[in-house]
Amino acid sequence: MPNYSNKTTGAIDANGEIVSHATRFLAPGVISIQVTGTFSGTMALEASLDGQTFDALQMVDVSNVHGNSPDTHTTVTAPHLLCTDGFALAYVRVRATAWSSGTANITIVTLNG
Image 1 (tube, rainbow, N blue to C red):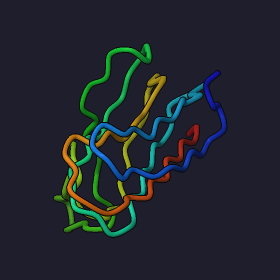
Image 2: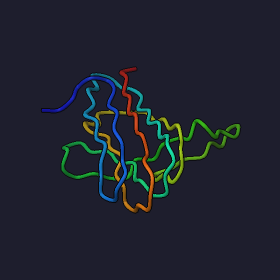
Image 3: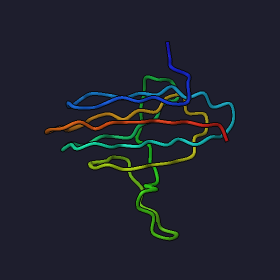
C-alpha cells in the first residue's frame, strides 16, 4: 500500500537501494528532497506516473543557488537540499546507482500548491 503522507524518510547504504515516496497531488505541488550524511556514492533522482517506469527528475539545488542560474541535478554525490515543481507525478524516488561507503539519509516531502 502506498504511503500517501506528505513525508517519507529512509537511508541508503548500498548500491541499488531505494527510498520511494508516493505523492498525492490533487493540484500542482512542490517536491523537496534532502540528502544528508557521510557517504561515497551516486544516487539518481527519479519520478514516475505509474510506479513501474521511472525517469530522471531534474531538481534545483536550493542549497547552492547563484542568482538566476541555480544548479540543477538528476543525480547527487553529496549532501544537498533539492526542490522542483510536481505536476501529476505519482511516485518520486532516490535510487543508489553506485556505492562505496557510508550512509545517506533521505527525506522526501511533497506538498500541494
